[in-house]
Length: 372
Length: 239
Image (cartoon, rainbow over all chains, first blue to last red; front, top):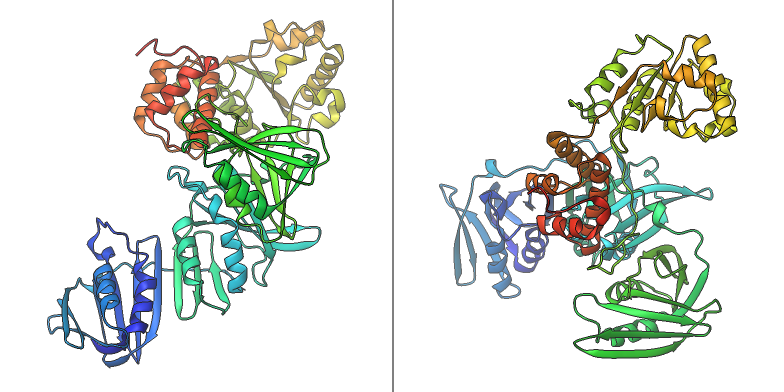
């Protein structure tokens, strides 16, 4: 294999794929990126066995071939090369070393046999549809904060994607929960997604997808089965296993008879929560909301730090209510509110509260209170 | 929507789906007799069979296994208030009657139950009754119904021994998609009340405590739950 490639092109592709590679690997080949050069294209692939990213970039290939090299080291080298450099990449005669040349810099990296590199096959992916990058970004951003990070709750370690019908309309719905809060967002069901299986896309795959689609404006082609998903755009293919678990029947925790409606200016509310929660203990982060007609008093007390209160003018005309929440959860949710106002639909201090964006009825959040 | 004293965060009641297939039913010495009777169907000597045992001992699970096998509808005492025997008896004259011991002290339910029994017997069908106590202790006032029920074969599910309790705990954790190590099971069975019901309560409380604190299920968490939940049973008694 021998090729020459522009440093920034190589750096961008390497940044994308090396992100999949874990810092510690018990299987040595998983620390490497697979490089495959042919017909003016360099294909880079990295995988952790659950997730694989492949990216194709233009390169001046003078000798086709393939090799593998340590992903993080390769990336660090290219990152430190001067902007605008032309990078020559070549395998030695024995294919045991990958040689890099740029300007006066020379590097030699150990390789591992390409035969050892695992292939994460997509398999048969019977459902295929297309989402705009904007739709996908919105779906991920409004749900990912609620994904559980507790590894043993594997069935909550992702976003549950499924097709639903409501009032004669069809939606693609995304749901995430960690048992304390739940985020549900929906978008119009794309053509081809009818009858798709309900799937749980894992947190790591979601994080990688979100990074990769940050700059694109092109549609993302999604294909999936009940065990695998593949997303394709801008020459990048991400293939991921799906979580082999059963997502809970989340509808049961979305209250239908909450009747106390509190409307707050989301920016003013978030800033006040942030200020008052400075006093909350790091461990509980609890904050109390005392709601009365026309006013909301936020307060926090802590034996170590002291106390804080702040009063806001709000829209509320029901009977008084005191309810506690984790301040971080309130901030997580209000940061997803795009409109000026957030609507809290409350029942009592021990029951789930619904939070909605008054400017966007596609998103719904459920928040469990804290005892304060 | 429950909490523990240490964790003020309440949790969403996300529920779980218990596995109720035949392969999920744990056969052991304590329920072997009941399982043998159920497996012997349709070769029962009378129009019915009673399975009785403590709460959460798997009676309903076994009933569901039988029901799925023979295509029988499931009824509860409340159904006797709303539907007549021909409708209750189902297509094939086979019925699974869950919680049958609670029909006592309700003359109308006893009357409908007797008609249902007679109808099923006429059609050469069978009723599988599940209950917490044997028919002789159901305090049935209607003499004809009482004599018929007392004449039925009755199989008992006994309280669990250690291996069964351990297997039940594992199954209950698995129903909640929680993988726990053997040290959790050993710690629990050495310290918990020895009943199926306590096993169910313990696993539910551990699930909630782990979700509230966003921790994995560990021995310290389990100890915490055992110490703070009086309903689950005595702690530290048999280690």
